[in-house]
Image (tube, rainbow, N blue to C red; front, side, top):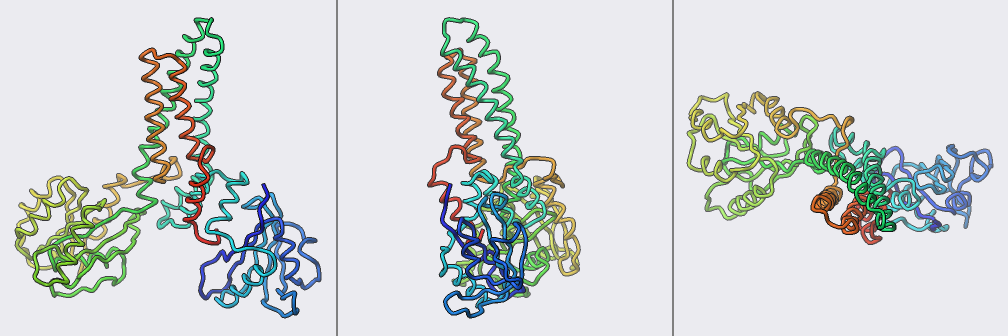
Length: 461
């Protein structure tokens, strides 16, 4: 498959030591040869593959030096895209890297679309679709655990399992074809049923195993939407600051200081939390605070985890009890804060209200109880640990949806066999399962979906 030559900046924009402009395509080396003057006078096309060379970029129109650079040459097919790849390492200033990119674009390359380098790796057979999606997961990983899951998928752990399941289904389909082609042999159908059920049950069990990891995998990929709620001045903003280890939220003794939802990502024992500090939920005449309270109620409905904060030095109020009612049936950790102050709260009543939830006491002023809280969060979702290296985790919403559809299709096939349905009807459900699994790795997927997936990537990847 031949494509034109693309180029893009592959490092974040801004000031830094080094920036990289990447080219990929049949003309990548030819374009670089027009611009690069090495200190030994040799052209890049004469250099060995996978080497790096010092020299200068010059504008071929007037011979003016544009940048002092190091240029890497990588000849296909042993590259990320399986095409010839050039990487120009220049100084990391905004002006310098843009000058280099503009020079490359003016001399035969075109600007890459978002994710086009990875898209070419997929289209050229270097990686499959699930591995391509893992590249973006790796870039966006917010914890070591999330990165390990992405690495496993990028190395093909999920792909290998999906391919093995599709091969099992193909073997079943081959036997069915024999049954259809030679209907005069009565024992063929019996043999097909005998062979089909164990293999179909095996595929079903493997899909189920993958789906069992999906909740944890999705959390690692996307983070837990975690909402901190409580009456004003119970320490919600202090809790946010303690978990983030920065003063992100304003902390005062004045109730109603937080007027809106504050969002921050935090890593708690390897669990990524999208932490939302809300305005205190209470009745108020202040119109601005009232808007904040309404937003707090809205994010509460969409949360994966609720941190409900109470004040150790206050009496339990009707508003506190209403909060317990509002979070009924959700994953909740109850935090009784300000234990450094004299006790006013009825802890027995709190324990009664929180009987279905984990209860933690803290003094955020003295940094007490935060470790217990972090352990409670990790234990609630991962039983305290998760070993990404030992398990194939499914973390992508698209993959989870396709696995659920595959599970339904294989269950329909098993049910049809058990009811004695004609084997050619069973074949329809099995073929559907095979196709759905193929969509995960990109063997049977529409071009529009491919374009949509890669459009979410950053420009130089």
